[in-house]
Length: 260
Ligand SMILES: [Zn+2]
Image 1 (cartoon, rainbow, N blue to C red):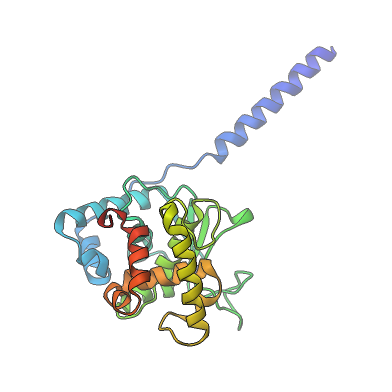
Image 2 (cartoon, rainbow, N blue to C red; image 1 turned 60 degrees about the vertical axis):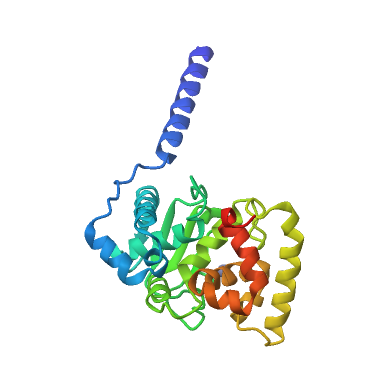
């Protein structure tokens, strides 16, 4: 009798375990296909896309479609429009466009809030200083973005700011396990120390108000890397002119095949 009870309990436990495993499996998303209207929107808003040749533009579109077929975008008190999908995917692809076969393994879902939010993710109140965040702990594999700020980053192409790119650079930084401003898997070992020194020196210049890099970059090394990457992708010519050493090391990180 006891044996039968043990068998029944074991069977139930196995079934429960199987159910948990199956229900936790990522649900397949609907395949996203790029249509002509999407190309028009990309031409209208994404400078990076406009600067690619025709062949590279097709590649960019394919990678956007792949991103949107594998990552869910959920609106929280806001509608996710086609433009938002495209701009979030463009933010994801721009930093890693020169890495072939790159996948954001650490991202399942983007939550889109209408505008900025506070530390506790409240959408109201006076402490709403955040436009994006890469989830941690129970929010692992989730990113939160402000719809207003993502759009603004692309609409205002003259600025050095782009919230979407900023948050995806944090995710790139996180692939070695730590968001610390040192993308160890992308930067050659011999450049880690020069990169650290240059970050420290540049942060010091921001603190002494001797820099045109956003003061938010002086928060810590991780924020410096994300902020200066926004600058690199938004205003590359200006970064090259004002900060040639930063430009060179960022090129080594994001576009390694052009550097020898
Ligand atoms: Zn940040």
